[in-house]
Length: 342
Ligand SMILES: [Zn+2]
Image 1 (cartoon, rainbow, N blue to C red):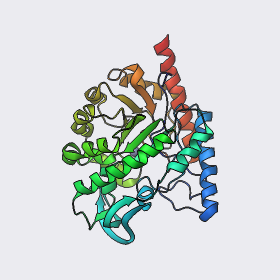
Image 2: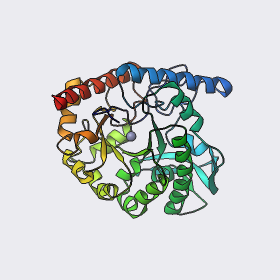
Image 3: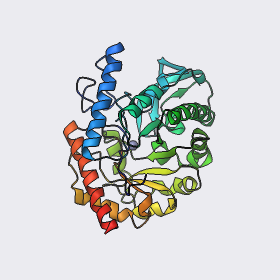
Image 4: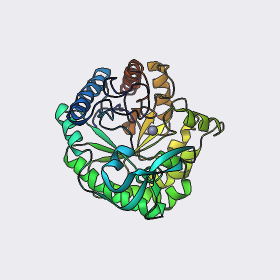
């Protein structure tokens, strides 16, 4: 990116009400078959237009192409039985009924590559595409085959690498891996989680990002946040390993979070997507509030490596609120950009 402080979103944006029930996370599609395929493309176009009108620099599909940030990818793989479900604890936080790994996991054909090519054809702006990270994927399944979290993570990492190479060939500029599990399973992240992520980016020449957040603004997550105390120091546990990794960009939750900003010093040298928009409230930040967060982060990240962003995805928010937050992000970044170039 040549532009200083290029803005982007961490993840999803709201879907139109004709595609899926609004203001609900992971709500099922309202269309199917060819209508769904066309509806998703139309929604992608709308989501892109909203990002562009707000002045977002690095654009995405707004995750209009998927129902769930992990499950939709896994649905396309062999070896996972979606009929056979077990209840597991997700990120040690809430119980969910999840599919079962019943055999070797493989990717028969590309999952999102056609969607990425479609997005590429709509814009000349840099595009970012999100994939689930290996550790977050295994945490969303019951494994009756490998019976080893680490083994399954390495299998997924190899599959993600195949997908990522094809996304890069389709013209994606930044491939982002969502790894909220890094904020929970510190020992595993350090033992093999970051290494598995590096396996997923092996051989890529496009930029790569890892998104580590405290989750969507759902009750299980906001309740969990209440237990984390005055200072959220989770990032401290994995940052040294990430600093030494080949990942280019680290995407973080900073707005209204209790993350001490100075932890960013631990990944000095990386580009940092600083979350300056809180996705757990419908209150729209003012450009000044966004600018304040960005200014604070500039103590710990060089200006040419600061990427203003959102804390997480905005799928569950009302569309108007999400639009307002995108515009606030762009306006806040512009304030700091003009200060820096003054
Ligand atoms: Zn997130």
